[in-house]
Image (cartoon, rainbow, N blue to C red; front, side, top):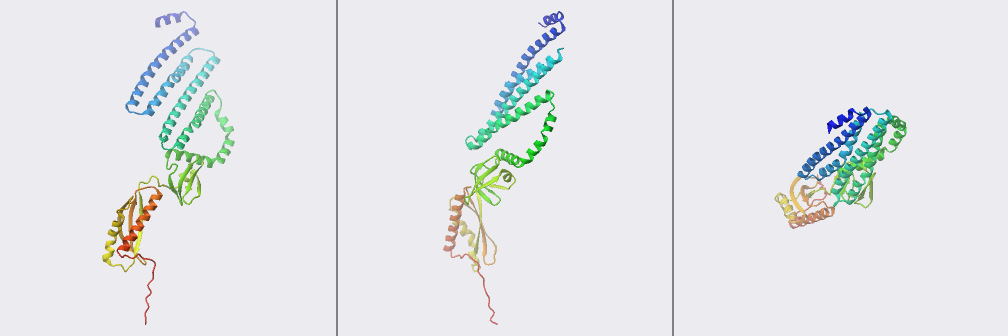
Amino acid sequence: MLDFFINLSEKLPSLVKDIIISIFLLVLGYFFLRVAKNIVVRQLKKISKDNQNLLAYKITNILAKHFLPITYFGLFYLTIKEIQLHRSILGAVKTFSIIATTFCVGRLLVDISKILIEYYGQKYHDSNKEIERKINALFPALRVVIWTLATIFILSNLGFDIGAIVAGLGIGGVALALASQGILQDLFSYFAILFDRPFEISDLVAIDDYIGYVEHIGIKTTRIKALTGEQLILANTDLTNSRLRNFKRMQRRQVILKIGVVYETENAVLETIPDIIKEALIEIKNVTFDIAFFSGFGNFSLNFDVIYYVHSNELYISRMAQNEVNFAIKKAFYHHKIIFAYPTQTLYVNNN
Protein backbone atom coordinates (compact mmCIF):
# COMPACT_ATOMS: atom_id res chain seq x y z
CA MET A 1 0.00 0.00 0.00
CA LEU A 2 2.84 2.35 0.80
CA ASP A 3 4.34 1.77 -2.69
CA PHE A 4 0.97 2.60 -4.19
CA PHE A 5 0.88 5.98 -2.43
CA ILE A 6 4.49 6.70 -3.41
CA ASN A 7 3.86 5.92 -7.09
CA LEU A 8 0.66 7.91 -7.01
CA SER A 9 2.34 10.90 -5.39
CA GLU A 10 4.96 11.04 -8.18
CA LYS A 11 2.22 11.62 -10.77
CA LEU A 12 0.37 14.34 -8.82
CA PRO A 13 1.14 18.01 -8.22
CA SER A 14 3.08 18.94 -5.09
CA LEU A 15 0.08 20.40 -3.17
CA VAL A 16 -2.16 17.40 -3.90
CA LYS A 17 0.70 15.10 -3.00
CA ASP A 18 1.17 16.83 0.38
CA ILE A 19 -2.55 16.63 1.08
CA ILE A 20 -2.67 12.91 0.32
CA ILE A 21 0.37 12.23 2.52
CA SER A 22 -1.13 14.32 5.32
CA ILE A 23 -4.43 12.44 5.17
CA PHE A 24 -2.52 9.14 5.23
CA LEU A 25 -0.50 10.29 8.27
CA LEU A 26 -3.66 11.50 10.06
CA VAL A 27 -5.41 8.17 9.52
CA LEU A 28 -2.32 6.23 10.58
CA GLY A 29 -1.80 8.51 13.58
CA TYR A 30 -5.42 8.09 14.64
CA PHE A 31 -5.13 4.31 14.81
CA PHE A 32 -1.73 4.52 16.51
CA LEU A 33 -3.07 6.90 19.20
CA ARG A 34 -6.11 4.71 19.70
CA VAL A 35 -3.97 1.63 20.27
CA ALA A 36 -1.63 3.55 22.60
CA LYS A 37 -4.60 4.89 24.57
CA ASN A 38 -6.08 1.42 25.03
CA ILE A 39 -2.78 0.00 26.25
CA VAL A 40 -2.04 2.83 28.68
CA VAL A 41 -5.59 3.10 30.00
CA ARG A 42 -5.83 -0.66 30.49
CA GLN A 43 -2.68 -0.66 32.60
CA LEU A 44 -3.80 2.34 34.67
CA LYS A 45 -7.20 0.77 35.35
CA LYS A 46 -5.52 -2.47 36.39
CA ILE A 47 -3.22 -0.64 38.81
CA SER A 48 -6.08 1.38 40.33
CA LYS A 49 -8.22 -1.76 40.76
CA ASP A 50 -5.37 -3.67 42.38
CA ASN A 51 -4.84 -0.81 44.84
CA GLN A 52 -8.63 -0.44 45.33
CA ASN A 53 -8.32 3.28 44.63
CA LEU A 54 -11.73 4.45 43.42
CA LEU A 55 -10.57 8.03 42.84
CA ALA A 56 -7.67 6.91 40.61
CA TYR A 57 -10.04 4.66 38.67
CA LYS A 58 -12.45 7.55 37.99
CA ILE A 59 -9.62 9.89 36.94
CA THR A 60 -8.33 7.19 34.58
CA ASN A 61 -11.75 7.01 32.91
CA ILE A 62 -11.75 10.79 32.46
CA LEU A 63 -8.27 10.71 30.92
CA ALA A 64 -9.35 7.91 28.60
CA LYS A 65 -12.32 9.99 27.49
CA HIS A 66 -10.27 13.08 26.57
CA PHE A 67 -6.91 11.62 25.60
CA LEU A 68 -7.71 10.91 21.95
CA PRO A 69 -9.31 14.29 21.03
CA ILE A 70 -6.52 16.33 22.66
CA THR A 71 -3.65 14.40 21.07
CA TYR A 72 -5.38 14.12 17.70
CA PHE A 73 -5.96 17.86 17.35
CA GLY A 74 -2.30 18.40 18.16
CA LEU A 75 -1.32 15.83 15.51
CA PHE A 76 -3.70 17.48 13.05
CA TYR A 77 -2.03 20.87 13.44
CA LEU A 78 1.52 19.48 13.24
CA THR A 79 0.63 17.59 10.07
CA ILE A 80 -1.24 20.38 8.26
CA LYS A 81 1.53 22.85 9.16
CA GLU A 82 3.94 20.99 6.87
CA ILE A 83 1.73 21.52 3.79
CA GLN A 84 2.57 24.52 1.62
CA LEU A 85 -0.77 26.26 2.09
CA HIS A 86 -1.67 29.89 1.82
CA ARG A 87 -0.85 31.90 4.94
CA SER A 88 -4.51 32.72 5.61
CA ILE A 89 -5.56 29.08 5.30
CA LEU A 90 -2.73 27.97 7.56
CA GLY A 91 -3.70 30.67 10.08
CA ALA A 92 -7.30 29.46 10.07
CA VAL A 93 -6.12 25.89 10.64
CA LYS A 94 -3.91 27.05 13.52
CA THR A 95 -6.78 29.01 15.06
CA PHE A 96 -9.10 26.02 14.78
CA SER A 97 -6.51 23.69 16.33
CA ILE A 98 -5.81 26.03 19.26
CA ILE A 99 -9.50 26.56 20.01
CA ALA A 100 -10.33 22.85 19.69
CA THR A 101 -7.36 21.69 21.79
CA THR A 102 -7.99 24.30 24.49
CA PHE A 103 -11.66 23.36 24.58
CA CYS A 104 -10.78 19.69 25.05
CA VAL A 105 -8.23 20.46 27.79
CA GLY A 106 -10.79 22.70 29.51
CA ARG A 107 -13.35 19.90 29.48
CA LEU A 108 -10.71 17.55 30.89
CA LEU A 109 -9.93 19.90 33.80
CA VAL A 110 -13.64 20.51 34.46
CA ASP A 111 -14.38 16.79 34.61
CA ILE A 112 -11.39 16.10 36.88
CA SER A 113 -12.34 18.94 39.24
CA LYS A 114 -15.91 17.62 39.36
CA ILE A 115 -14.70 14.13 40.24
CA LEU A 116 -12.41 15.49 42.98
CA ILE A 117 -15.14 17.68 44.51
CA GLU A 118 -17.71 14.86 44.43
CA TYR A 119 -15.21 12.44 45.96
CA TYR A 120 -14.36 14.86 48.78
CA GLY A 121 -18.00 15.79 49.33
CA GLN A 122 -19.00 12.15 49.75
CA LYS A 123 -16.91 12.02 52.93
CA TYR A 124 -19.57 14.19 54.56
CA HIS A 125 -22.52 12.33 53.05
CA ASP A 126 -23.53 10.76 56.35
CA SER A 127 -21.97 13.21 58.82
CA ASN A 128 -22.81 16.72 57.66
CA LYS A 129 -25.13 17.49 54.77
CA GLU A 130 -24.46 21.24 54.94
CA ILE A 131 -20.69 20.87 54.45
CA GLU A 132 -21.29 18.39 51.62
CA ARG A 133 -23.56 20.92 49.93
CA LYS A 134 -20.99 23.71 50.31
CA ILE A 135 -18.22 21.58 48.86
CA ASN A 136 -20.37 20.67 45.87
CA ALA A 137 -21.17 24.37 45.44
CA LEU A 138 -17.47 25.00 44.68
CA PHE A 139 -17.77 23.31 41.29
CA PRO A 140 -19.48 26.20 39.43
CA ALA A 141 -16.79 28.60 40.68
CA LEU A 142 -13.99 26.27 39.56
CA ARG A 143 -15.65 25.82 36.18
CA VAL A 144 -15.77 29.61 35.69
CA VAL A 145 -12.08 29.89 36.62
CA ILE A 146 -11.07 27.11 34.22
CA TRP A 147 -12.97 28.52 31.25
CA THR A 148 -11.73 32.05 32.02
CA LEU A 149 -8.12 30.83 31.91
CA ALA A 150 -8.88 28.90 28.72
CA THR A 151 -10.30 32.05 27.09
CA ILE A 152 -7.23 34.07 28.10
CA PHE A 153 -4.97 31.34 26.65
CA ILE A 154 -6.86 31.36 23.34
CA LEU A 155 -6.77 35.17 23.07
CA SER A 156 -3.07 35.20 23.87
CA ASN A 157 -2.28 32.64 21.15
CA LEU A 158 -4.43 34.51 18.63
CA GLY A 159 -2.23 37.57 19.00
CA PHE A 160 -4.15 39.69 21.48
CA ASP A 161 -2.04 41.63 23.97
CA ILE A 162 -3.30 40.23 27.26
CA GLY A 163 -0.80 42.35 29.19
CA ALA A 164 -2.26 45.55 27.74
CA ILE A 165 -5.79 44.46 28.63
CA VAL A 166 -4.75 43.64 32.18
CA ALA A 167 -2.83 46.92 32.47
CA GLY A 168 -5.87 48.82 31.25
CA LEU A 169 -7.91 47.24 34.01
CA GLY A 170 -5.08 47.65 36.53
CA ILE A 171 -6.30 50.79 38.29
CA GLY A 172 -9.79 49.41 38.72
CA GLY A 173 -8.34 46.07 39.82
CA VAL A 174 -6.18 47.69 42.49
CA ALA A 175 -9.14 49.70 43.81
CA LEU A 176 -11.32 46.59 43.83
CA ALA A 177 -8.62 44.56 45.58
CA LEU A 178 -8.19 47.17 48.30
CA ALA A 179 -11.93 47.45 48.81
CA SER A 180 -12.42 43.69 49.03
CA GLN A 181 -9.25 42.81 50.93
CA GLY A 182 -11.09 41.93 54.14
CA ILE A 183 -13.74 39.96 52.28
CA LEU A 184 -11.11 37.96 50.40
CA GLN A 185 -9.27 37.17 53.62
CA ASP A 186 -12.48 35.89 55.17
CA LEU A 187 -13.22 33.91 52.00
CA PHE A 188 -9.81 32.20 52.07
CA SER A 189 -10.29 31.55 55.79
CA TYR A 190 -13.66 29.98 54.95
CA PHE A 191 -11.99 27.55 52.54
CA ALA A 192 -9.32 26.82 55.17
CA ILE A 193 -12.04 25.97 57.70
CA LEU A 194 -13.97 23.96 55.12
CA PHE A 195 -11.06 21.74 54.07
CA ASP A 196 -8.87 21.70 57.19
CA ARG A 197 -11.92 21.14 59.47
CA PRO A 198 -10.68 22.58 62.79
CA PHE A 199 -14.35 22.48 63.86
CA GLU A 200 -17.76 21.54 62.49
CA ILE A 201 -21.39 22.39 63.06
CA SER A 202 -22.55 21.64 66.66
CA ASP A 203 -18.97 21.48 68.03
CA LEU A 204 -18.36 23.11 71.42
CA VAL A 205 -15.43 25.48 70.92
CA ALA A 206 -13.62 28.17 72.89
CA ILE A 207 -12.02 31.21 71.24
CA ASP A 208 -10.21 33.54 73.65
CA ASP A 209 -12.83 34.34 76.32
CA TYR A 210 -15.78 33.08 74.26
CA ILE A 211 -17.20 29.57 74.46
CA GLY A 212 -20.22 28.11 72.70
CA TYR A 213 -21.63 25.76 70.06
CA VAL A 214 -20.98 26.35 66.35
CA GLU A 215 -24.29 27.07 64.60
CA HIS A 216 -23.32 28.16 61.10
CA ILE A 217 -20.15 28.46 59.01
CA GLY A 218 -20.61 31.15 56.37
CA ILE A 219 -18.42 32.56 53.62
CA LYS A 220 -17.52 35.64 55.69
CA THR A 221 -18.58 34.92 59.28
CA THR A 222 -19.20 32.03 61.63
CA ARG A 223 -22.05 32.09 64.15
CA ILE A 224 -21.56 30.58 67.62
CA LYS A 225 -24.28 30.10 70.24
CA ALA A 226 -22.63 31.15 73.51
CA LEU A 227 -23.29 29.20 76.70
CA THR A 228 -24.66 32.40 78.21
CA GLY A 229 -27.37 32.50 75.54
CA GLU A 230 -26.31 35.20 73.12
CA GLN A 231 -25.15 34.61 69.54
CA LEU A 232 -21.54 35.41 68.70
CA ILE A 233 -20.75 36.44 65.12
CA LEU A 234 -17.03 36.14 64.40
CA ALA A 235 -15.14 36.80 61.16
CA ASN A 236 -13.57 33.69 59.67
CA THR A 237 -10.19 35.42 59.68
CA ASP A 238 -10.45 35.92 63.46
CA LEU A 239 -11.11 32.21 63.90
CA THR A 240 -8.17 31.03 61.78
CA ASN A 241 -5.83 33.52 63.48
CA SER A 242 -6.90 32.59 67.02
CA ARG A 243 -6.01 29.73 69.34
CA LEU A 244 -9.16 27.65 69.23
CA ARG A 245 -10.09 24.81 71.57
CA ASN A 246 -12.48 22.15 70.28
CA PHE A 247 -14.07 20.32 73.21
CA LYS A 248 -16.05 17.90 71.07
CA ARG A 249 -12.89 16.10 69.98
CA MET A 250 -11.77 15.69 73.58
CA GLN A 251 -11.81 12.01 74.55
CA ARG A 252 -11.78 12.73 78.28
CA ARG A 253 -11.74 15.85 80.41
CA GLN A 254 -9.16 16.33 83.17
CA VAL A 255 -10.36 18.13 86.28
CA ILE A 256 -8.09 19.48 89.03
CA LEU A 257 -9.94 20.07 92.29
CA LYS A 258 -8.26 21.99 95.11
CA ILE A 259 -9.31 21.27 98.71
CA GLY A 260 -8.18 22.87 101.96
CA VAL A 261 -8.50 21.50 105.50
CA VAL A 262 -7.84 23.27 108.79
CA TYR A 263 -4.36 23.35 110.32
CA GLU A 264 -5.68 21.65 113.42
CA THR A 265 -6.15 18.38 111.51
CA GLU A 266 -3.98 15.63 113.02
CA ASN A 267 -1.09 14.23 110.99
CA ALA A 268 -2.48 10.71 111.06
CA VAL A 269 -5.73 11.95 109.55
CA LEU A 270 -3.89 14.04 106.94
CA GLU A 271 -2.11 10.92 105.67
CA THR A 272 -5.41 9.13 105.09
CA ILE A 273 -7.09 11.96 103.13
CA PRO A 274 -5.83 10.79 99.64
CA ASP A 275 -7.21 7.28 100.28
CA ILE A 276 -10.50 8.69 101.61
CA ILE A 277 -10.95 10.78 98.43
CA LYS A 278 -10.03 7.83 96.20
CA GLU A 279 -12.58 5.59 97.92
CA ALA A 280 -15.25 8.30 97.56
CA LEU A 281 -14.68 8.80 93.81
CA ILE A 282 -14.02 5.27 92.63
CA GLU A 283 -17.70 4.31 92.23
CA ILE A 284 -18.87 7.45 90.43
CA LYS A 285 -20.07 6.86 86.85
CA ASN A 286 -18.01 8.35 83.97
CA VAL A 287 -15.27 9.35 86.46
CA THR A 288 -11.80 7.86 86.83
CA PHE A 289 -9.75 8.83 89.86
CA ASP A 290 -6.12 9.68 89.10
CA ILE A 291 -4.35 11.03 92.20
CA ALA A 292 -4.84 13.07 95.37
CA PHE A 293 -1.90 14.55 97.24
CA PHE A 294 -0.89 17.10 99.87
CA SER A 295 0.07 20.05 97.64
CA GLY A 296 1.16 22.72 100.13
CA PHE A 297 0.59 25.09 103.02
CA GLY A 298 -1.88 27.91 102.50
CA ASN A 299 -2.50 31.07 104.50
CA PHE A 300 -5.28 29.40 106.49
CA SER A 301 -5.41 25.81 105.18
CA LEU A 302 -3.51 22.64 104.41
CA ASN A 303 -4.07 22.20 100.68
CA PHE A 304 -4.76 19.01 98.71
CA ASP A 305 -5.02 18.61 94.93
CA VAL A 306 -7.40 16.02 93.51
CA ILE A 307 -7.04 15.02 89.83
CA TYR A 308 -9.69 12.94 88.09
CA TYR A 309 -10.99 12.38 84.54
CA VAL A 310 -14.50 12.62 83.14
CA HIS A 311 -14.99 10.24 80.20
CA SER A 312 -17.20 12.48 78.07
CA ASN A 313 -16.90 15.63 76.00
CA GLU A 314 -20.48 16.67 76.85
CA LEU A 315 -20.55 19.75 79.04
CA TYR A 316 -23.69 18.62 80.89
CA ILE A 317 -22.18 15.24 81.80
CA SER A 318 -18.99 16.95 82.94
CA ARG A 319 -20.87 19.31 85.23
CA MET A 320 -23.02 16.54 86.70
CA ALA A 321 -19.88 14.49 87.33
CA GLN A 322 -18.34 17.46 89.12
CA ASN A 323 -21.52 17.73 91.20
CA GLU A 324 -21.29 14.06 92.25
CA VAL A 325 -17.58 14.35 93.03
CA ASN A 326 -18.12 17.35 95.29
CA PHE A 327 -20.97 15.66 97.16
CA ALA A 328 -18.97 12.45 97.55
CA ILE A 329 -15.96 14.26 99.04
CA LYS A 330 -18.18 16.34 101.32
CA LYS A 331 -19.92 13.22 102.67
CA ALA A 332 -16.63 11.37 103.12
CA PHE A 333 -15.06 14.26 105.05
CA TYR A 334 -18.17 14.58 107.22
CA HIS A 335 -18.05 10.85 107.97
CA HIS A 336 -14.37 11.04 109.01
CA LYS A 337 -14.89 14.34 110.88
CA ILE A 338 -12.46 16.24 108.64
CA ILE A 339 -13.09 19.99 108.68
CA PHE A 340 -12.81 22.11 105.53
CA ALA A 341 -10.80 25.29 105.95
CA TYR A 342 -12.21 28.74 105.35
CA PRO A 343 -10.58 32.19 105.64
CA THR A 344 -9.74 32.79 109.33
CA GLN A 345 -7.36 34.93 111.35
CA THR A 346 -5.85 34.15 114.76
CA LEU A 347 -5.18 37.09 117.03
CA TYR A 348 -2.58 36.70 119.77
CA VAL A 349 -2.84 39.16 122.69
CA ASN A 350 0.19 39.86 124.87
CA ASN A 351 -1.02 40.68 128.41
CA ASN A 352 2.21 42.55 129.18
